[in-house]
Length: 162
Image (tube, rainbow, N blue to C red; front, side, top):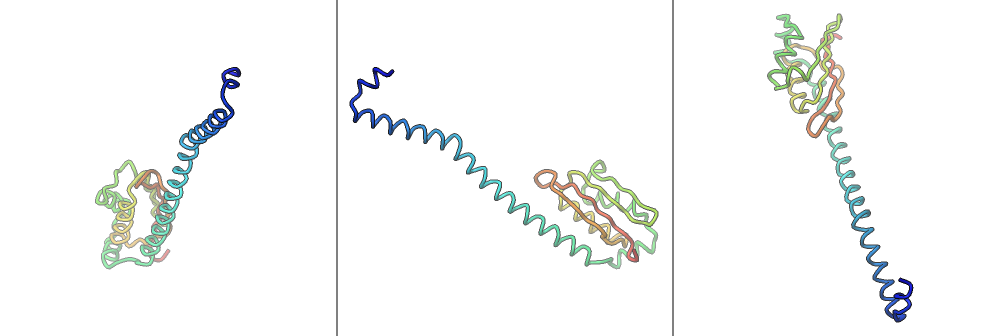
């Protein structure tokens, strides 16, 4: 190889050196730097979308909390509708599978629901149905992304006087 190199004219050596450097640079760019740059742009876009989702979730939770009980909720509360039954019915109406929700009612009447991998829109629909049908008010709401379009959430509903 050394003999071959020495047999080249100085002008050819310079040309071959420049071409080798350009070829190595192109390989490094297209195999390493371009994919990393593209992935960085994708992650920035995902982060911006997630921040927008969180802002919307907070706004929706505040609207739900501010809405308070409706006339239908007062009627349901007066009729003594069992919160667990109402929660199961609301889950069915919101098309949330029974396996995706775990419900508990405390002695103080606080209804706590844990959801796993449910569409966020279905979760909001369930929450709206519960506040309308039972007279319970949203007390706590937390959600995090489980997969694209799906969330894992914890919701707590309490009576109007709690």
